[in-house]
Length: 111
Image (cartoon, rainbow, N blue to C red; front, side, top):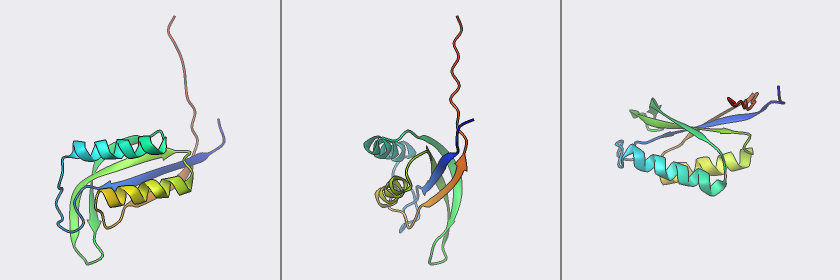
């Protein structure tokens, strides 16, 4: 096994911070997210999940959330991506979770 690397997941809700509703299609948000990752030159995986969020003013919202997973990306780059997504998706905040993990790439071919 390889030495541990950092696994980071950025959770971004799709409901607008002020109106509490999703303004654009999920596909549009995915397109923006993919363009952000491409511009930073990072490999990624993204999952669409359901989530809930408690706003600073006490409002609670349930929404579609995109979970963007990055492996081995420098923390400063992760935070730049998180700030961009927060601004582009008009969020009050986004959540960034990280932990060490082991990664191995398995390659095999049939002859």
